[in-house]
Amino acid sequence: MDLQAKAAIVFLVLLAIILYAKRDKLFKQNILSSVIYILMYRTKIGLKFMDNTAKKHPKFLKYAGNAGIFIGFLGMIFIGGLMIKGTYDLFSVPEAKPSVAIVQPFSQNIPGTFFVPFFYLIISIFVLVIVHEFSHGIMARRHGLKIKSSGLAFFAILIPLIPAAFVEPDEKKMLKKGRKEQLSILAAGPFANIIVAFLVFALVALIASPVVDAVLDYNGVLVTDLVKEKDKVFPGETAGMNKGEIITYMGGVQIATVENITGYLKDKVPGENINIRTNVSSYNLTLGENPQNKSMPYLGLYLRQSTKLKPGFEGGYAKFAASAMFWVVGLMIWLYALNLGIGLFNLLPIPITDGGRMLQLGLERFFEKEKAFRIWKVVAMVFIALILVNLGAGFIK
Image (cartoon, rainbow, N blue to C red):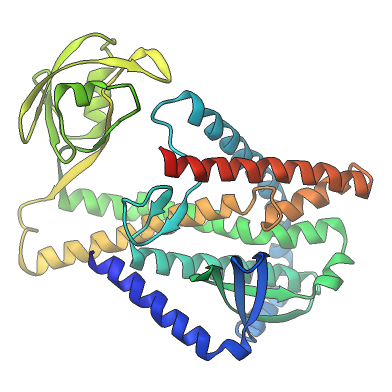
């Protein structure tokens, strides 16, 4: 067990002890009986900041609210379409991965989950929930709604697992607001997460990426795993290649980057024989058919870029500085991925998300309230089923 997994376990133990000590001040909100629930610790933290921000930037928030509604529904269509396509691919594409997985910081080898190193996960979760909840609060204040409390929340499956934050507007008064005002408040959180994701992406592309290129050499392509399916063997496995090898040559052509492999294979066809040289051995491989396009060649390998430090950064303070920089870049990449992924997931039309409430309000614009609710219920049930199918597939595949 590595340091990150140990830190995650220690964190959960300490969290359980602290929450038990503070149990009299916690409010429990059940999602699925007492199995899945949220613990809330109410405070007044950040309320003054939300109030001041709403007062100082009313015009900007008006335009941001309109943009949030548009992006919110666009994101709902996008993530809903991805979920439907991803579920279809589970049954038609051999190497397709589930569209939904439980995020966890313990191990890469837990089926049905998506591994994020603990320190990256805890920092990213802290940032994204603060951005999300404060955006809801600021937009609520922009429309004159009182924020009753803010505070810490803890998502639990039997035991508390994931720390979060919350902002609690006056729900009764919110329901009396116009449809557009309600939509702008609901959309503010996911919209802010998506904006943060693209701002971080821009920082990585414009600043971090050139700096990393100045420090790293690209020394081949790492085989992270072999594609495996029941009753089917793919070219990489047939040739005898193994996880952890670094591809350096293909057909006598030097391979330094993933793009080199793409360029080499673009003129090849299924059934063609090629030679692959790695840092371990040399292999003769017959290209297979790509499951998504049978006219394209297929290796049956999961690949990612392999790198090493350039001369001058291999020891002393230079190596420490380079390692620190890579850690920060890694954090930025996870900030981007988790803000975008969770922001979009929050737009799915299911009961516990902002997207679920947005869809219900949107349907009421076109249908009588009871009919809108029936349509919403059907849509929500469909997407809950898709989520469960994808989660289940993660444990089977």
